[in-house]
Image (cartoon, rainbow, N blue to C red):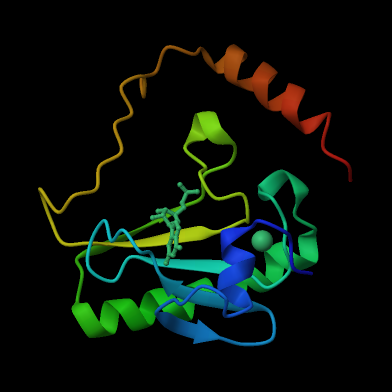
Length: 143
Ligand code: 5GP
Ligand code: ZN
């Protein structure tokens, strides 16, 4: 389903040109217009869905199922030494286009242009804290 004023739906409809990397019935993959590193690719579902919260499991399944082969192709062509997958949801988390997408960002070493800066990635939580947090989240997951 195409969505008014969605840039990525316009790309799917061919209204906005893009550099296609891959396409099938479920997904479309194309180069990010602002390449963080060479080969930086976005993969999107053909169904408009705003972000991960609004994504039906079936759409998520088909989307992620294509990621390994696209990542593998980028690896084969440009021989990056690593690859980051990134999915931003909502503006405070840097989502700027509100059509679900996964970034595939090949990594070429220090200073390649990408970094994730986890300044609070410490062990401040006790194991009891961690058990409680896990329980809070688990108890709200529909089974
Ligand atoms: P977000 O910030 O939502 O995670 O990522 C959106 C990405 O879409 C950005 O990295 C941005 O460069 C890319 N983008 C925005 N508009 C266009 C466009 O018209 N064409 C392409 N190929 N990429 C776009
Ligand atoms: Zn859309």
